[in-house]
Length: 88
Image (cartoon, rainbow, N blue to C red):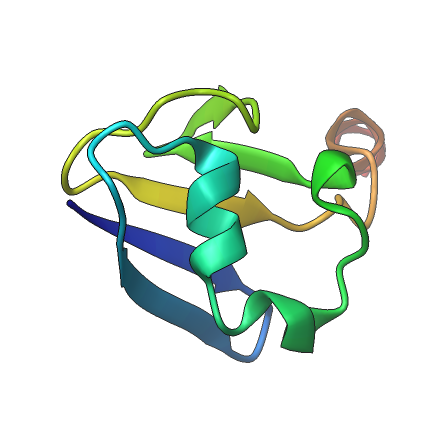
């Protein structure tokens, strides 16, 4: 089955489609991804991951056509940003 892996930065993004066995997991997809090592994001277990915007764990099973998203860490706390905007 085919699964897409995506990662986005402020100025560029990476996308790759990998072909995997029918019973693959999120970890299997990431291990098959060729650009993951280039990003130097650290250990797989430390990554925030999702499929179509829903958080997923490394052991979660994937389906044909799923898009595994690798999330970047937040630069600032969203709640603190909202408070600062509200103060004016």
